[in-house]
Amino acid sequence: MPTRQQFRRWIKTTLQRDVQIVLRIVDEIEGHALNKKFRGKNYATNVLTFGYADTDPLPNNTNLLYGDIVICTPVVEHEAREQHKDLQAHYAHLAIHAALHLQGYDHENEQDAAVMEALETKLLTKLKYVDPYKAIESKA
Image (cartoon, rainbow, N blue to C red; front, side):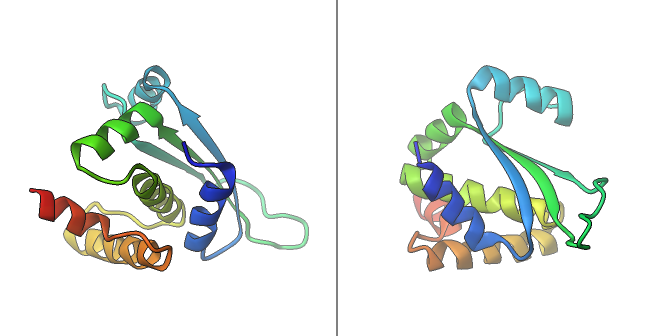
């Protein structure tokens, strides 16, 4: 399990604006329940991101972004084993992926996915991790 400082470093590397994030690490039961309740999907997923745009600005006009990131440890560990990835690198990738979602990035279409994946790769390389998408392709 990564340390608080590791998660903080990965997310801070990703941030393009001020944020207040709650990061929760959950088991498969809670991950499944949250994915079903909020995404309508009947399984636990590796990471969920919830952004809150309806909060009032702070008195000093700081445009702070608020959100929750939920990482499901058993799913992350299973994926890392199955995809032959370093576990820490996979956690770093998912933390970065979630922080990008929080800032408005998405992968609903090919163009948006290409932008998001390129940014993830750039940030992970900056942190001295391998490109997670090449790692998947080379094992396929």
